[in-house]
Image (cartoon, rainbow, N blue to C red; front, side, top):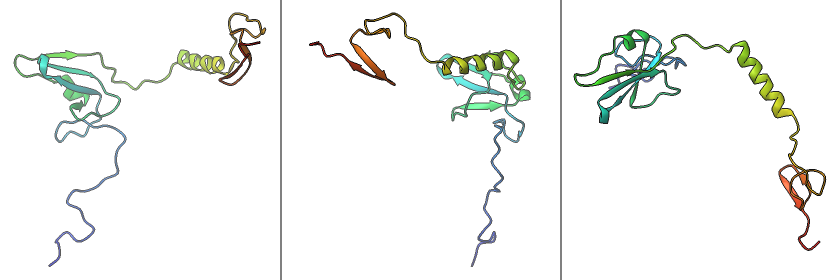
Length: 139
């Protein structure tokens, strides 16, 4: 006899994977805004901004669950500053990025002057990229 579900059905329904991390609390589907980590050695629960990536021993919480968080008796809750709004680059950020790109595109100037007139090591004859041609110590 065959399976009741049929050959193409799975026991767990499969949906498209979401790029938004969800709250770790059971039956809560809201987007996560904070990460909870337990420091067992110090009896401390640390609630901070959403971690860059999901860790197995950390819990992502939505805003409602992060506000209502309580710790076991005798434990301390440390709440780090969280920013629940999406961050957008400001005009200053964009200007700083543009200046950094311009600076990286400029040819590098060497400080000091050597006997070769290019600055740097007096034993250096020429340079190609990161490689240097050095004068023979005999000459």
